[in-house]
Length: 258
Image 1 (cartoon, one colour):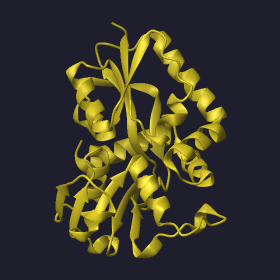
Image 2: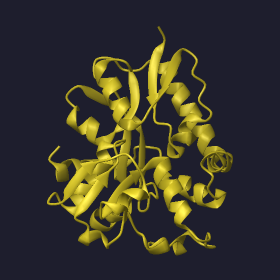
Image 3: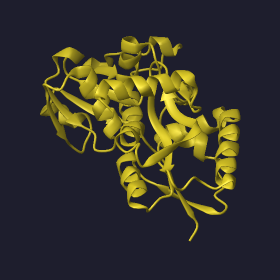
Image 4: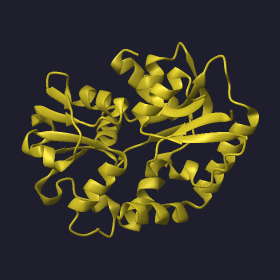
């Protein structure tokens, strides 16, 4: 059986995965919550997993030293869509795809709210004050609210068509002035990945980042959103695990008691 590696099927992972050539290992594409379970159960040997999952199981897991998926400022794909301003939200429908985004929302908004896991999109606003969406669904939903794409991404509205959109990574940045680390590569402590797997992951990342415009065009077509929006979205990500990212992850761990 080949070595097994897990990746979420999201646009923000495309720079890491589009040019990946899985020789000697196989890939499993699944949402973060499923990948987390698969790594812990032994279905996977290495996976991109949510930060909260790693922090909760760091006694059993080790990280790749130079990989992460983080953002300094707006992320565009971890959004609370709401009928009322952020601090007035009381009833929240939560994504079922990501534990990290849920913990970040509760940290920023407060635990004294009604939170409930629900499948769906903006139609949930008929029963809730806000709905937390992540990944491709969040990007599509936000793009669908835009009446037109402004010349500058700095002019993107925060209340398109009357819906308040709170970017959680930006809210984290305003509070801490640090990047927010959404995902890390993790493996069991006693089973580090083979050197050839690491070499291929690094090679694919180099190629993906050097051909980011091509990656963005493909993902924009897949999602049905404007290419300039997708290109800026991918530009914003940090795919290495540098000192600011490590500080951001440590700050999040302290904030949630991890």
